[in-house]
Amino acid sequence: MYVRSITLGVLIAVTFNPPVPSAADYALQSTGAVQLRAAGKEARYGVVAPVDGSPILTISLGATSSDGAVQLILPGNQVPTPGRYSISGDSFQASFMAGTAEHPLGWFHGESGWVTITQASEGHLSGVFEMRARGFLAADIVDENQQVTVRGSFDATRDKTATRMALGR
Image (cartoon, rainbow, N blue to C red; front, side):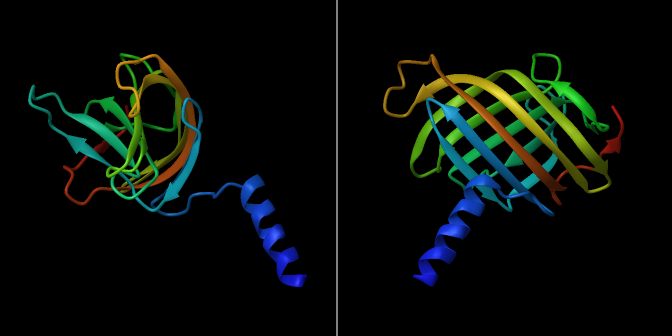
């Protein structure tokens, strides 16, 4: 009886108090076409130089080891200063992959929402985000009008392989 009470208490605590990220952590939750929670220690950011030569800052959450992954992309090579940024064409762009790399559930492109950077320092970037996204489920890739809302938080470290970045945007 005592073990059941403790187990029930732990389950209630986890359900109503989602994990708060610490160094290099993230947590996310999606609702809508895919409902899942994911958390982990794979939160990184860095600058990538795509084929066209324009650098982009990318924040990657759960890229290889999670039940869900988010990628937040910002044009340029500077870490954004603390503040609220929109998810739109000229600011952050976002995407969400539901499921694991081996068993994907769907892929969604952020259409609106926001990213709030709460702390930015050399080697460290933290914040919260909410995006409304549209995409498809792996079970029906033809229907690209499935919708999800994804909310989360991150405490990311700079990817050691990334180029050096300047603070301020």
